[in-house]
Image 1 (spheres, rainbow, N blue to C red):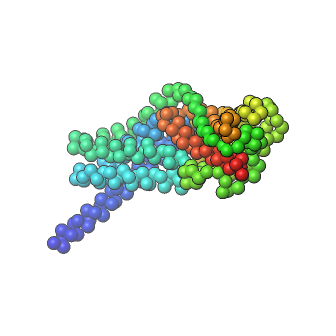
Image 2: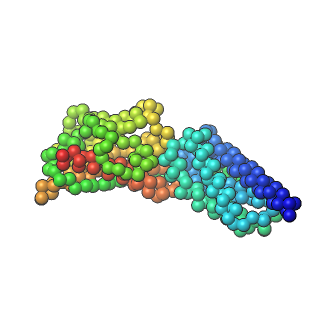
Image 3: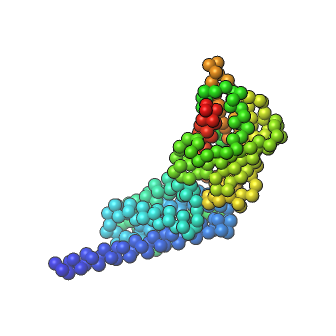
Amino acid sequence: MADKFRATSSQKRMAIVRVTIAIILGLTFSWALYALLNIFNTSPTGVIMFSFLVIAPFCFSALIAYIADPFFIKEIHFYTKTALIFMVAITIASAFILQEGILCILMLLPLWVPLSLAGSAFTYKVRKNYRKSRTYCMALLIIPFIAVPIENQINITPQNHTVSREIIVNASANKIWPLLRGIENVSANEGQWNISQNIMQVPRPIGAKLIGSDIGAQRLAKWERNIDFQEEITQWEKHKHIGWRFIFKDLHEWDFLDEHLMPNSQYFQVKSGGYALIALPDGRSRLSLNTQYWIKVPFGSYAAIWGEFLLGDIHDNLLHLIKERAEQ
């Protein structure tokens, strides 16, 4: 009985060792691919490639599962746990070693987690048909790296998107218009609570000031985390409409870790925006805010969902800020 217990304990220790080694190898391969895409800049879109977003999590997780269970004795839940441990490890490594921002990580996980689970499940499904482990493991390892130069030959066309939000304000257009020119001092408790800015820590506005008036005027905006940018007025109809194009300078001074989400990056550029104000018959006003941007990444539709969510929260916060001020 004691021998059986010792054997079981030894098997558990060996299983832990195998999983640990497999996870370390998975992290090493992921970092190597990240370096190939980002550090050596082999792609115009950096790490934002199909190879990294889809192929890598599937293949590396399948490889890890194979290494962790070389004798094909584990059940499917072992493969699931191994994939999830890999995801936890890659999240921690991304945040603390690669210094990726929380937003990039959160946007990546909805793709990586199911693909990682699918990769480990694939190994579980076909493991008994692949006794030649060296061939199987080498194939899983090199596929993501082979895909990179192939994908580099594919041109990605930028996709244009617009995010719009509106709100009804219990005030006249004459009272709202000065607030559209800029609110210089915004307190921390103003605006609307939202997931993006309160939970995910997207910066909030601190103030904005319009220098001049009419087309050609400059609107200076200041946000949290040392974020400053300009808006050049391109559309102006007093009490009705104000539009601008964004000008981003000195982004290296921004205290913002999500470099892939910088508003003038090679993946994502915020181009223009504006307020529209419509007076209603009952004395209230309909205020809308829109922003135009383009993205140049694989899975542009997936990225646009995040754009709608994040920019939508920012819009809702700004509109509620103006509503609160106008109705006071």
